[in-house]
Image 1: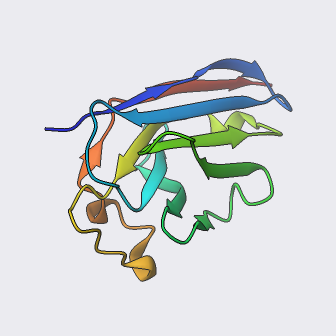
Image 2: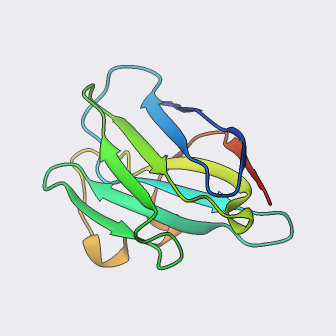
Length: 130
């Protein structure tokens, strides 16, 4: 079973920036899409952003558009989330996710659906203070 390993979480003041990274635990076929979700205390898990690695098409939740940027890393099955202008409402555990099916299914119309993604990381905490 391939694992996704997240890094880069932490605490920051409102208006600050953080960069999250995610990589697969071992060499494997190309995953697509790769995405970030988040879950705040007492709330449901929600999508943040997704990237289809073959086309580099990206999708964002309305709440983070213009502030967050998802990108592919130089290594296969690596993805980053650059988070700028952070707000207290961004406080959550952030999870990396990927559709690990080979060959990739590439269902761009459901990029936001958690059940589309078959592999998940353990999560990394992001805390934004006011």
